[in-house]
Image (cartoon, rainbow, N blue to C red; front, side):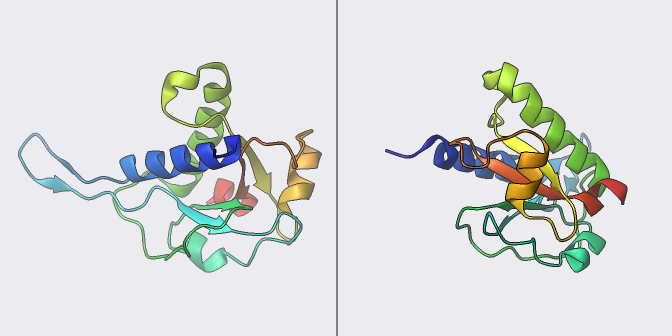
Length: 145
């Protein structure tokens, strides 16, 4: 049986896929939506890798201490600005804690400063990084793009 964090990771992955689907305009043209965010594996006690190149492309790396396929970072088209997407992830995760029917997992989302670990970022926010709930880190630089 999967843990709560594994279930939330699957929910987050599904939400990212759904948020990255192309759509049709009222005139029938295709509106392209590249990846809303990319999952990046980082050990709980290791500093996040340098993601400045990915951020410069408009990618939103979502850091987690779970094995996920390696992210491919390419220039993003058809998505909101990087800082808006980062803020939306924080907001929707917080809202999901109180309203689990939103379609987004009620995970913990923390800003991770350069050189900081996921554990340090969680503890600074009063979150137990060893709890079963999924912990997602967003590089602090994503909020100032």
